[in-house]
Image (cartoon, rainbow, N blue to C red; front, side, top):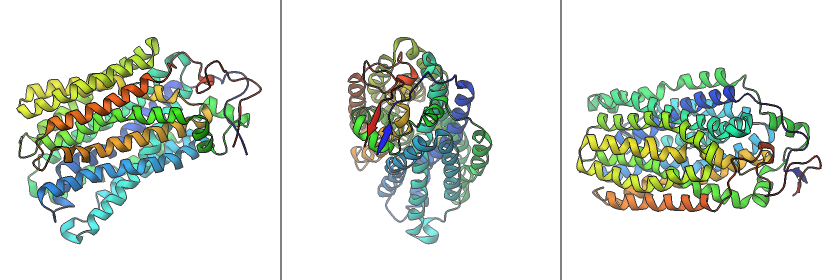
Length: 453
């Protein structure tokens, strides 16, 4: 069987980068609103709602593990949705993933509690969390591929950053919704209050269909399809010809541990009996940090279009290894001004340097024929480890959850792995879009580079 691994002929016609970036932004915001409200609920509510049959420490550990379950499902979703996206186009994945996420999240808000049905409650919760993970696996990779392939070659970093900008906006929205919910009297919170953010996601399915149904396919993918250069088995081509880049992306994606530790474990630690900080105040820390990220993400991305992806990413990954210990230390002091300062610098500024440019950095490592599969599989394996990092952190913190130093070291080590992975790759920001993913010195030619499976 033969699959074409590069697009032949003249460069693809100009895309519509602003339209693609807006569709990526709004879709990611809506979808990751759903994804992140689960994280807040897992830290603050689910231990008492779905795992009340266990002691407090075990219930918290089990609840945080459900947060990671979605990340375990994401590599499976990446293989399936990556194949569909590289065979049939990016647009179909962008529409379907948003609808799946909205439906799964709405159903979580309808679930019975442990007190009502016993062990069936957490089993149903895990099942729906898996569906969330499958959806998220295709969302970012398809949105990033769509935006990158529509963008001018010299502004790919800037336009692809809007996918992550939408993700941050979704996290802000999720946190803002949870602030008044978390402030409810405990009885109301645990009986019906926690359901409100999940039930509100019913609008996601409708919004996703309205926003993305008229989005045009990317010029380079349409050109690939016209030239019969769409791989019949993208996964086979990817693993044979691009396995090293998949491995690099997987290791680089471990940087996402910074986000999960900041968003979920640090929130659980700060509001635990050991520290005793107010839930609502800590949620405002997240809102403030993500608000700063909305501003810094496109700025870092524009810088990467000028000086390259690697130096900007390394600022974020190395800087995060330094800042996470400072943030967790600030929480241990109980000083709210210090927590806000270090939180904004950590997530809103430093981490955003890596977070804002990974869509272009990773996407530029692959050809059009396997780009969505390569990004999806590489990132989702790395993100799966990052998701379960919350559970690992809970174990490292010990029975009383007070060993923040161990959690900080663990996070810094993963940041170091991410940094080394990016250092080992080549710079790609000046390579023409139609030549991305080809070996150095090669360009797309009328003769086509073919791959025999």
